[in-house]
Length: 357
Ligand SMILES: Nc1ncnc2c1ncn2[C@@H]1O[C@H](COP(=O)(O)OP(=O)(O)O)[C@@H](O)[C@H]1O
Ligand SMILES: [Mg+2]
Image (cartoon, rainbow, N blue to C red; front, side, top):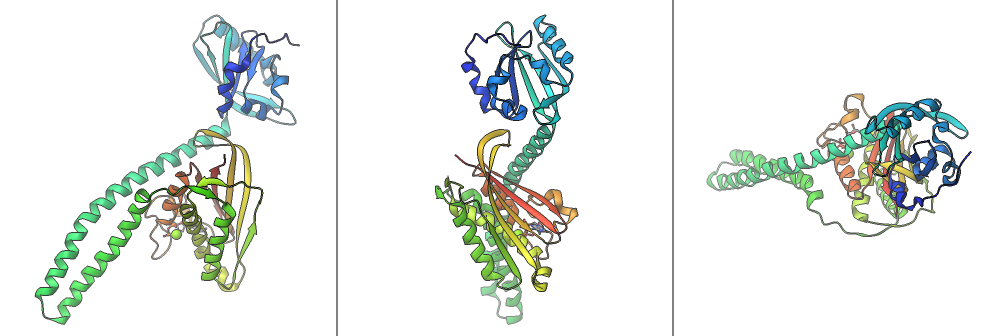
């Protein structure tokens, strides 16, 4: 079915870094190059795909054949449409196809974006944008609060020196105490942006064990913390303290959500580590990534705040600061990673994804 492919495909190798599926074909549909993502999705090796007729990989080959004809006759610069791609041993998947001409005559680039992947990518991009906007907002807000706060506290102290009545100093004490409380809050808001990034070799299980010890010390009875580790996970460069703090915030939330079950004695948190291969997040594709799950059997994240939990100051608890997850997300993003949440009554799963070298 194929004629030998005469040209070297090596100049297309940069396409292997992309998360989208890419094929370079001749106008007759013969594949000159298939990138790694396409190999993965089709479940076929590059050697099998290259040299074969690409339209045959679609449920409706004629659509692509027509598109290639159009590209050949310069009918368009780029054409987009939706189609179904066959996969060896799996159901076909819906993809968004973009057919584009190249500089090279007779070579056409076909880009295919799996639609579920597109939806997920959109969501992750939104999360990242959101986190970015959050950071800005927090920083600005914190500075706005910090400046007048010093003035308020100082004035209350001066006032206290001027008054003799004990009853009245109680009021100035309230002002000072509350100003101090706000000061601490503001410092916490500014902390992640100020803290230097201390990079070293991180063993993720050491991080997990530190957090486990801390939480078990706080909840010695009624809470089981299950270790489900993949010990083959390699060390990676990162800031250990930041990751401990991020994980602690997540596990802490889980323990707090489990209050009821801790009382009845059947509360459970699972710390699960896994290696994920060929994953995409934040538009980047990674060969390897660490997946760290914190799974609890609590009541789940309240529906009313579900899509906002990573926002600062969003809390579902009495007395909550609503900063725990914002900080955790910031720290993990500093490791080029992402935290996602999947929650239902009885099972809440916070997943931390961090790229591995
Ligand atoms: N594992 C969990 N189960 C149920 N709800 C959770 C869980 N983790 C977080 N939440 C919800 O998300 C909110 C925000 O968490 P966080 O940012 O740490 O702020 P805080 O803990 O100060 O409220 C919590 O108040 C809680 O309502
Ligand atoms: Mg919290």
